[in-house]
Length: 455
Image (cartoon, rainbow, N blue to C red; front, side, top):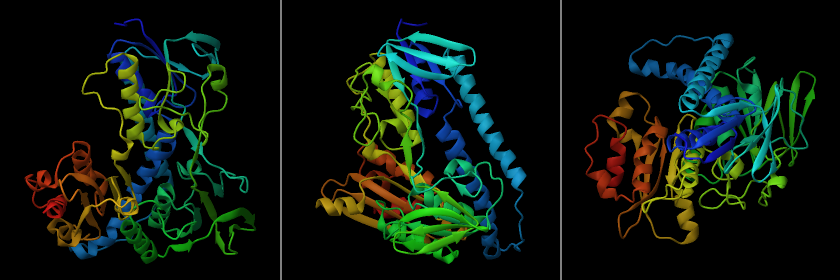
């Protein structure tokens, strides 16, 4: 039953969906406007398909471990149509379950484009015409889109943005990946696992700038072992067709060639055409909607969340922002209510090896002069890793030398994205390394490396 509060949400991605479901549970009247796909374009047209393809590529790569596990190795073939059908099925199922959940909670879903005409009213334009909606609170969760530089014109066929890759039309014989951040390295891993010859343009001196240097080095080693060409310290300046090739020219004169090229150089916030000026909402210097600790914009009853807020571009962060916004809108703040601490968000990179981290980074602590204790354990000393014939990687824990409180951690290796959850819980709850050490974990398991690192 509604308590009279009407929350209007623009954007049906993880942030909007989470805010809608929580606010509806708390008794709000909720209207959600989505112009493209319920579930979020970045989430369902980029993130989920990429992970589905990486999983398929990983299954192909796994066959290379079979010889060391007593199984005769066999060649495998790619069925592009089956992969495309699989991706469409996964996306369709997530979209339908998300829609059903929202509708079951009484959320009104409008298909169309919303635009503020004042700070208290939006106009929704759809195939049926226009509708004016007044609200007590608003959430802008319009997401982001792949960044396209002025020196490149993607055609969706040979020069690609990240969203042009799903579902796959063909698997390139050779491809140049521009951008060595999280998205870029995942593309390198994905295409190389499917047998493409891959070149990676790295603008810095290591892939994954800002991540743990040892983790980045481990990934570079695996890339090189798989035949990936790394163009370090090179910044792309142009991408053009030349005959049957796509040519990427860099600022230092180096050139990378392939049958295809893909841009993975970040994203831009979707802030155009939604009437932010008419609502009085201001952007920050980076072009995102500025928000405070409660995700409020400069207009107190208008919130922003997800990629458009300029915080960590993670679905988990967006979902949590949505929940916190619902609590704030509905006045459900408690004494123990905690605002989001973005420094404690766990993240994972689905390459091979997998990389995951949370909390304080070793390099960050070093640059700030903070005293820390670093303990590192290789998976090669863990029985479960040997059982799986995959001993690559390590667990690294960072703690306060005086209190023993866990400050952060990095995991490189098999199932790192799952294992980091233990460290994330410790960081969020201010647990000590002794709490991990005293935990009775499964044997044999990769998680035992966490216990060893805590010793």
